[in-house]
Each structure stands twice: as C-alpha cells, then as structure tokens.
Image 1: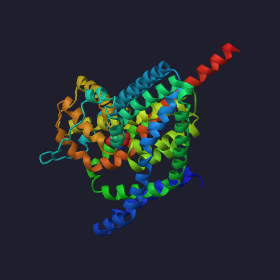
Image 2: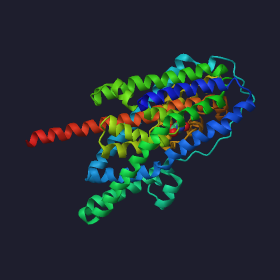
Image 3: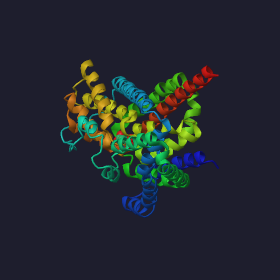
Image 4: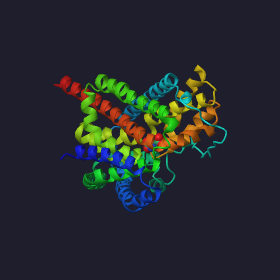
Length: 411
Ligand code: ASP
C-alpha cells in the first residue's frame, strides 16, 4: 500500500478513534492516552522535530550555494515575501467575508461575563525583524529560532559559493550530511501513519465534542474559509502562475498536509513538506530549501484565516460590529502578525490578542474559542504549509522557464 493511502487511513481512523474516545469515561481515556496514544505520538513528534533544525540549516546552505549568485537569492527572496504577504492578505479578506456572512457570533447566546484570557506576550514585529541576524548561531539552533537559522545558513552558503574550490571539502560535507538527513526523513516517514493516528486520536479525544456546542458555526466559518482559500486562491495560483493541475498538486503534497494536520506544527511538517515538493512536485532543491523553511516561519494563511474569523466572531458576540477601517486594520496587523508567528502549535491564538487589541476588541473573547482551537489548529496548519509549497512550486517553475528560454536564446 502506498504511504499516502496508509496515512489517509490513519487520519480517518485517528478521527474515528478520537470521537469514540470522547464517549468513554475520563479515567479510561486518560489511561489510554497516557500509556498508548501519547507515547506513540510523542516519539513520532520527537523523531520528526529532531531533524528539523539540521535539515533547515544544511539545505539552506546547499540551496544558497546552488543558486550561486547572491543577487539571484535576493530576487527570489523578494518574490517569495511578496507572494506570502499577498496570499495572507487574501486569506484574511476571505475569513472576514465569511465571518460577516455566516455571523458565527450570533449563532448562540454566549456568556461573556465570566470569560477571561491571560494574554501571553507576543513578540513585537520589529524585534523579530531586527533580531534576524543571530548574535549566537548555536543558541539560535538550540532554541530553534528559524529566522536566525535561515539567516546564518544563507551567510555560510554565500561564503561557500564565493570561496568555490577552496572550501570544496566543507561543501561535500554538507552534501553528505544532506544525504544522511534525507535517508532519515525517509525512515521516519514510514512511522508517520502510526504517529499521525496516535496524535489525532489523542487530540480529538481530549478536545471532546462538548466544546463544540455553540461553536459549531464558528468552526464551519473557519473551515469553509480554509477550503475556499485552498481551492480558489491556491488553485488559481497553481493553475495560472504554476501552469499545473491543482488536483495533482494536492494529491502529491497530501502526506505533508497530513503530518501538519497531526502535529499542528509547520516546523514539524517541514522536512516532509520539502521532500514532497522536491521529489513529487519537482520543485528545484535550491528553491524549495529556501522558500519552504522561510514560509514555515513567516507565512501562515490558515492562521490568518482563523484570526479573521475569530475577530469577526468576537466583535459579534460583544455586539461591537467592525467598520471597514477596522477590517483593513485587521488585514494589516494580522498579515504582520503572521510573520512573527512561530510554526508551533497554538501560537496563532497568542498573536490573535495583538490583532484584537489593535481594533479595540476585548482580548478576553479569546476564552470563548480556546476550547475548539486545538482542532482548528490541525486544519489551519495544513493550509499554512500548503501555501509555502505553492509558492516554492510557482517560483521553481518560473525559474525553470527562464533557464529554458536562456538555453533557447543561446542555441
Ligand atoms: N500551529 C500553527 C503552525 O504551526 C500556528 C498556529 O496557528 O498556531 O503553523
């Protein structure tokens, strides 16, 4: 059976088992979770997280060397960031639109008198940007600071390219390290169906169905917006800019989406996402290894959608409707917030506090959506990493066309 099929079955079984577990007594669920689901899920998560930092570092170094000319990297960088910002803004508009049309905040009576949300400090956007160059690259790696690792890797890659044959040995070393990491990803992927099953069953079982209650409409609004963005925005981008079939794209990329779904972490899904993009979608290694890790950190369309719908939802619950200028403010702040949102579970909610504050809505409203956020996090993370792969695919195809043209012209 193909890996994709196995993972698909694991996903379905995971959801079914999770829903089934919501009906067993609490102590039975907690025993199953502690002694079976949690250990399997944790081991899978650790296996995959173990290789994220080395893979990002090694592949960006090699990707930068592969591109050779730093100005080419600059051009690709600008296109990548532009794609990320524009698609995130579109995602927010879709989320706001669906929120306004479906009115999830009016789909029940929400008691706001007793809700409170302890706000966690969100990193200021300027700090994230200014601190992009690591004072201590080892610390950046040990804390998994992706943007800093990316910056350091680019520096090393540029130096290796400039020094050419003089540093051939180190370049070979990186190439061999890459072979080792690819070998490990292949092995770890074989455990994905089991890990995904355990993580999903545990998450669904823990979230429970009671939390859904009045939140069903909110969930429908988020899920519908995620689907629309995936089908329409990405569909058009793949078709028009990438000149390819969106259906085939999703088919090939599916295993990566399922790992994102089960881990709720863009970072954890990164090694598989890069593998699928390079091996199945034919994205150039030099482009995939630069565009996708950057996207896992700064591009979060799914998270942006949740934030847009949540903002409209909270505005409706507190009967403080959003005006057009406030909606524009949401688009602006949430687009910027997505840059500072780390690719780990649940951070989107922390950044939501910043968006709510900007438009003067009560941060306590977040308490209403927390119960269902774990489940939505799974879905939005799948979209988050898909956006990164769409961008990598489009840029790679564009580069391929350019080099074909050059070959034709010189011939
Ligand atoms: N879990 C998301 C990710 O890793 C971030 C979030 O929305 O909380 O992409």
